Image 1 (cartoon, chains in turn green, blue, brown, orange):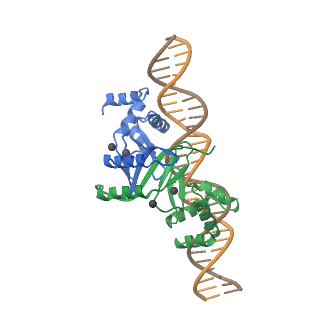
Image 2 (spheres, rainbow over the protein chains, first blue to last red):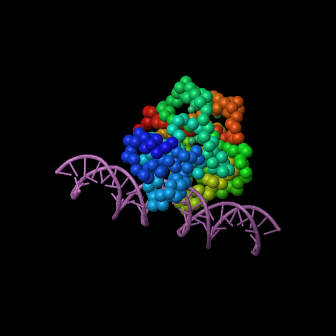
Image 3 (cartoon, rainbow over the protein chains, first blue to last red):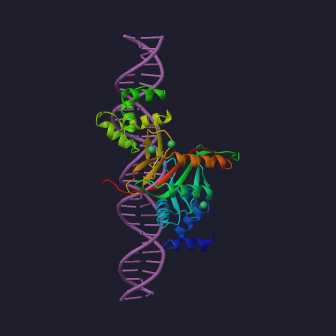
Amino acid sequence: MDIEDIKNKISSGGLKFTHQRMVIYEAVSQTHSHPTAEWVYEQVKENNPSISLGTVYKTLDTFVNAKIIQKFIDTNGVMRFDAVLEAHSHLYDKETNEIRDYHNHQLETLIKEFFEKNKIKDFEVEDIEVVLKGHNKQKIN
Amino acid sequence: MDIEDIKNKISSGGLKFTHQRMVIYEAVSQTHSHPTAEWVYEQVKENNPSISLGTVYKTLDTFVNAKIIQKFIDTNGVMRFDAVLEAHSHLYDKETNEIRDYHNHQLETLIKEFFEKNKIKDFEVEDIEVVLKGHNKQKIN
DNA sequence: TTCCGTACTAAGAATCATTCTTACTTAGTA
DNA sequence: TACTAAGTAAGAATGATTCTTAGTACGGAA
Ligand SMILES: [Mn+2]
Ligand SMILES: [Mn+2]
Ligand SMILES: [Zn+2]
Ligand SMILES: [Zn+2]
């Protein structure tokens, strides 16, 4: 994803393009680690020492509202951000707190169809999320 | 659930029976609202004005470790407690932040079987949780 | 070009849920 | 009774997030 792509992504959310938004979106989209605001801040600060943590929080929140990234709360209550917008599940490693993606259309379809057939009384489902907790095998090292 | 049942429940976790543990377990088990520590504190304080919030936190944590209640983090990052130990899903109302139970064996089986057939590479699944976000219809004011 | 209004940003204070520390109390045991 | 370990109250400390305030950048009107 080059500068033009990022520029387009930010504009597509109806947002003005600024340097801070550029580098923050870049940081989030370049990793699959579901970063915290703090991580994004540390990352971005290397080349932009004058950026503030508050700006990182505010910008990430702006991105979430504009629906160009998504956020969720991890098992420790910390906010995590994800530039991947398509439906997918997350694998939580109980030991390391790493969060991996798990993308399986068959599972998505299975669950979606289940809830189409089995409507819940008095509740309208908008999002379905499967959270898988366990631990990674075969860690490198 | 009477005093004897609660006493047995606490003992079954290998814990000493105390008045504080009694009233805290009672408060958690009497509601289906997935209470916060603060809620439990307010509840218990009515008849036990000298109890401290720290004790409520510590006792709830003790219960979780003893596996006589469970806890999870809600979409706002706040701890929620649940005396229901059997596998079940939660319905999050995006507007009111209420959390309702959704218990459906068919869904549980469906998902469990899916992951038995479709092992994830390099990851051992220990817990599976389905989180449903949306909103309650027909609220009684 | 200059001026103005609006959106954006930096810095740090404030908030809130949770954890930690410390000293006191209780219950059980020798 | 005296000793010991576990439990509790009170409040300080922590850490992630939000809020406040003042300064900055930028596009459009004059
Ligand atoms: Mn993801
Ligand atoms: Mn529940
Ligand atoms: Zn998919
Ligand atoms: Zn069941």
